[in-house]
Structures are given as C-alpha cells and as structure tokens.
Image (cartoon, rainbow, N blue to C red):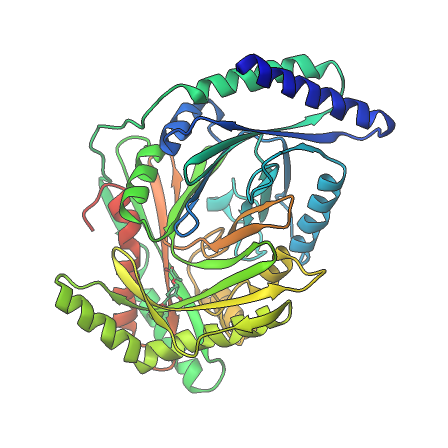
Length: 467
Ligand SMILES: C=C(O[C@H]1C=CC=C(C(=O)O)[C@@H]1O)C(=O)O
Ligand SMILES: [Mg+2]
C-alpha cells in the first residue's frame, strides 16, 4: 500500500520535473493523498519539531480543520507599508498557482496547496510586541493536514529547484507522513494557570470611552471600537497545545486558531467570520452587540431578549450591517441580508448576528472583499477614517494582529478569513490579551469596561483560569 503510494508520488514528481524543463524558475510542486484520520491535536503535538512555523485552524460550521507545518514559500514583509498588500498577495498567489504542478485528485475546498496566515490590523510601524508578526504573513505550509468530516488529507508542498533534490524530498515526505500517521492522542495532564494578571490602564481606557462618546455627540463620528490589553504571567512557558485543547473543548461555536511565528504564538477562539468563499458562493457575517450568558436558562433567555431589543446594541450592530452589505454588493450578485439580527450564543457571551450572502461576480475575488471589508465597523468604526484616526491617537496599545484578518485560500478560489478577536499573543511565559467594544453615543464607560471583561473570559479560561 505504502509502496504504491510512494510510486505515485515518484511518478508525479518526475512529471513535474519534466514539465518544468522548459521553465527556468523555481516551481511549486504540490501532492495530496488521503491519510488515516488522526486527532488534530495529536498531529499538532507530533509536529513539535516544526515549532515556529505551524498553523492550526478549525471552523465551527464547516467541520474542517487545518494543521499546517513548515513552510514551502512565504509571502511576507516586515516593512510592508503598502496599502495594496492584499492585491500584492493576490497577484503573487495567482502567479505561483499558474506555474505550479498540482497533483490533487480530490479537488475539495482546502485540499491541494493552500496559502495560510494573516495580516496586521493596520500598517503602523514599530510594533515591538508584534516583532514576529509582520504586517503581511501568508505562507504555504510545507505539510498540510486537512480534516473534513470523516476524511483526512495530507498535502506536501515544495519549491523544486533541481533534480538532485527529488530523492531527499521524497524521504522527507515519507518520514513526516510516518510520524503523523502513528496512532496518537493528545496528552497534557498537568494543571496549569497564570500566576498573575494585570489590566493595563483601565481608568485611562474608561476616560477614552467617555471622550469617544463626546465626539460622537458632537457629530465628529458615529461609532468607534476601542480595545484594551491585559497581560498575564505564568511561572513556566505557556503550553500552547494545552491552551489550544482547552479552546477546542470550551469554544465550539468559534474559529479556533493558533499561528506560530518564531518564538511567539497568536492564539484564540473568534466567533467573527469576515468572509468565506466556496464555489463562488460568498458569506460574510455581521457580529456586533453583546450581552453575557445567564447562569440559569431563564436568566439567559432574559438577557438574550433584552439584547435583541436594546436600542444601543441594535445601533452598534446596524452600522456593521450597512457597511458589510454595501461592500458585498460591490463584488456580488443576488445579495441577501435578513432584515433583523438573531442571537448568536457562545459559551461566555451572546451577540447580535446577521449573515450576508451573495454570489461572487466573475473577475472578483476573496481577497478583494477582505480588503474592502477590513476593518468592518465591528473593529474600526463609522466613518472608517475618522474612527481609525481616533484609535491611532487614543488607544493605548498596539493592535498588531488582534482584530485583523486571518485565514486561508486554496488554488481553486475558495477560502475563508475570520477576524482575530478573543485572542492572545503568547510569548514564552507571558501573554497579552485584547478585547474591544463598539462605542456609540449612548455608551456608558463602566458598562463597556464590563463588556471587555467578559470578552477576556474565553482566553482566560483556556489559560487555566476560572474567569
Ligand atoms: C472587538 C471585539 O468584539 C467585537 C465583536 C463583536 C461584538 C462587539 C461589541 O459588541 O462591542 C465588538 O464589535 C472584541 O471581542 O475584542
Ligand atoms: Mg458592544
């Protein structure tokens, strides 16, 4: 069995090499085969030797999990200050795909070569906290395990430069496949939790909220999202796989992700889809307006009923719907938007939720929609430029990849980006958590402060805390 597959692999790689004799450039070779299903967390744990270039992504609705490790090629730049970074990635990916050799008989969304990673919230320079996360970091993992329902696929991606490489690449592929095919289950039995945690400038943050509401009352803007930061320290390096295991167990309604870069890991469980495209069907989501979950079913019902009728939260939400609808209409036909939001319940909080769908018009792309949408008024504000200006001047933190697009795109125009909230940046034994709130004219600084506290909960629980 293994031998037959090895034979296919060899044939495939030889075909690729012969196709390329006329080209002189380096070429992406991508080979996909079915493998035995493994516990995704066990795969993550088994690939510890690739630490620093791993990515984990799972989507709550589609029942799909990606575990990428190693890097076949990277599109990044530390000094990416260019407004057209999304187009640049798009162009590069198109060129790479066009000259690649892809052996993927399955053709399912997310199989074959996949570009994964993310972008920073903005293009501000000098982000010491985020030194390992450039403004653009999208890469094709050398190995990608994709688990869809009951099936699992392994894709091997490599930039082939010469005939001499072939043998060593085949060995590398076979060895890695053997490692991750060993039956394994995730293990981590030690208790862990942070030793101390501290809010960064909470009073200052409340004053900024007040200032924002004043500016809104004066008609200078309509809405702005303000974030704050909390830092926690452990007495040992934070066990990333164990945090990931907790997020998967506790936050089933969210995209659970972990993106390693160098020594750091950006990790979280975000409920916020930015945009997804599958077979040219596009889906975006408006998620804004928040209430806690109740301790009893009836308290929970009451809190939900209050939220869905609350003018301040409905206003916060409507700004997002208006903007996303307009952005999606620019690239899609048959756009559908329900007239009122419904509740979206998570483990620790509930949100107002409105889906927006459409059919992507010919010539339009996922990344183009990402560019137009980001940042939505659930992360930035309205008008966008005024809100961003306020954020730059008043927010006392560096957002980095917090509240920014993260996700994947395959070679068949499918892909999905979420917005990285409910997240934290792990740096050895310390972690920075971020949480923001939509401020509108009736916002009360104290209530918004409490809202951010609840938004920290998913990460704090996953880090071993009780709240
Ligand atoms: C910016 C965050 O949440 C956004 C997403 C959903 C609800 C929000 C709100 O009700 O304020 C925020 O706009 C965050 O969690 O850090
Ligand atoms: Mg809110």
